[in-house]
Length: 320
Image (cartoon, rainbow, N blue to C red; front, side, top):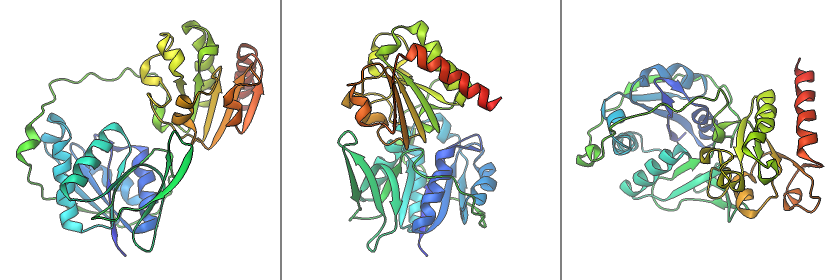
């Protein structure tokens, strides 16, 4: 069976959930071979093996932390040369998409970004994408070279599938461009104690109907009761009610959680583009004609200031 390279997104050896999802998808089209780079790379082998990696290539070097993405592209190019894989899978983060694009150019291959599903085809892997503001679903296949595919978080369930996970050192020669852009400082992101927005299984968002920054406490309380991330529409962000880093939509972040709860959001096409692939969508809005209701699985026509606190209390009651 052909091997599939999976780029490992980890922090000091702690593997992030989107990588484990990629291993699930990789098993559909071949045998997963993971590539872990930087400090703690060797520490990833155990969890990667538990989730299906037959081999784990590792390489630790200061360049991965000291410089931007080029050293990682150099390493993936070396892995492609060593393995001749059926495909290369990369998490669809901002960094992941840059790595994938540079790699595809290097190896003269086609690239597919923001896939939401992956399956084996007679002529190579076939990716499913949601395109044109999630108005259409397409099936896409790379016809030139080794397919390089980035996959959105929450596109597949994490499944345990114990494999050998044999650790092998990857031989990497850094290019002249690898040290072209140096990282001069880092500032830790302030922790909210909530899941990262693009990776969360549940997202609770607020929009114009929240009517003020102080009222986002209602949205946060519901999110915390569900163990969810907090999102916001562009209207709420532009008004200064919530940080831009939490914006969901065409000019913000795209999310695809198991459950998305929209509160006081009308459902403009720009917002829908960022959350339409959510598995289950619930909306709370007092405007019965709001476009969001054309999209939802469950709709509540009512004032969010009445509905959300009751929903929060009910969740707490059932959990407690």
